[in-house]
Length: 145
Ligand SMILES: CC(C)(COP(=O)(O)OP(=O)(O)OC[C@H]1O[C@@H](n2cnc3c(N)ncnc32)[C@H](O)[C@@H]1OP(=O)(O)O)[C@@H](O)C(=O)NCCC(=O)NCCS
Image 1 (spheres, helix red, strand yellow):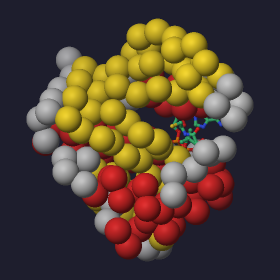
Image 2 (cartoon, helix red, strand yellow):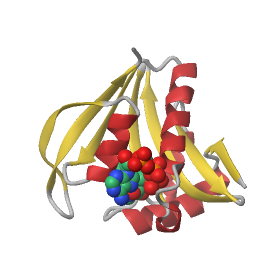
Image 3 (cartoon, protein in one colour):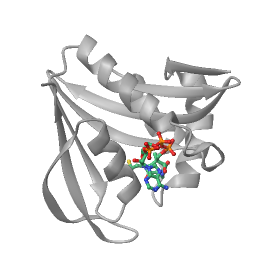
Image 4 (cartoon, helix red, strand yellow):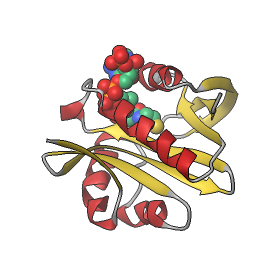
């Protein structure tokens, strides 16, 4: 059974496991607490009650910034990240967030394609933005309409 829900502290351990599987510089369980602070939020896709994909957004006034989106390697290509992203855009709209930004590794064709399909556009390149390995970021933006 699949469910889309706001991330709560009890999800942090499973989210952290996915972080470690997906990123060279994973967020610690403690840093994930940021997603439950202030106006920030995270969305998780649960499969049979366990986190299979998630995404986070930090929010200041009417601006949102996507932190990470990732799907556990065992659950990829099933539409889970798209479902998480779509739920994040809905939640942002409910919270009055009008402009959403993100950075993505230039070589990450899968994620770039996913964001373009969700309605993001590419704004430009931030040279040497990432470490481990060093790589440029593509900055993307989403504006409703
Ligand atoms: C990128 C990522 C989040 C996609 O997760 P997913 O749940 O498999 O994605 P979905 O099934 O919802 O696919 C959404 C779209 O992304 C693109 N996509 C996803 N995986 C892809 C792949 N291996 N190759 C090419 N395009 C891909 C496609 O456009 C896909 O749409 P489609 O199914 O209509 O072709 C996942 O591969 C991942 O966790 N990667 C590691 C972490 C990461 O790079 N996160 C993004 C940077 S913040």
